[in-house]
Length: 360
Image (cartoon, rainbow, N blue to C red):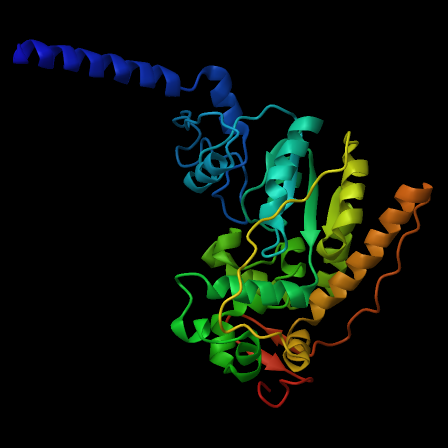
């Protein structure tokens, strides 16, 4: 009896394994979709067509498997594993997800809109404009959307978000934003440069000069990107140009009108609802950010403040066009002639402002 039972169990397991194999296999049509998709795990210089990389193009690479799902948890898991979603449309909608600017709340909405209007959705990840550069090089059609947030508010949010993470150093976890901004040494600020650096609120993302690994920049390209970013006037002009190229962008501080413009831009049947993403919870050490601390932060991020001012002007121009049918190109803010502070991953120098004597 025992032997017969074990044989029966073995047969059942073999049948289950065969069924799973058939369910998970990718047919020829699915393989074509997978090969044409832009990989989520690629770096800032991603070419997108990675199916034959590493084999000289002589033989097709083994197709990646995927299971179609509408679960946001599954989508994020597939992105993290580099599993490519199926492509159903000829055009992609790319969401330029600036950190701590509402992107986690937009992703589910962006995916719904893409499906309704007829796009493949590229989101649930961070990348800078290098991704779009790759699309341009291959003449692949796309539209870009993004969310812009006031730079000081974004940085404060990023600080408190970082402070909740397990990898946050214990000394930072005990600090308020005021302590961190006003009392940190140069070494501490550079160690947490990803939270505040000038460009993190928009300029670096729009100009393909972001150097963080979590944004997709390979380590060997970081130095050259920093060198490119030193021409700040060129970068500001480029950032403004690319913001103008977006199909739609939101001002996080003006969500109601932003959603109305989103409905108009994509011809949606009803006004979308912007949800809630990674909102941080207050911790025991929180005190309101002081004017002094916010002024110090402003001195560190003159480029992002310039871009945010232009974003507001461009937003108003698009709103006026939506309401009246007449578009008047907005005037750009006066071009910066110098920077109060500038930084790289290794250096921080301030020529003026609150940190001039502290970080000369």
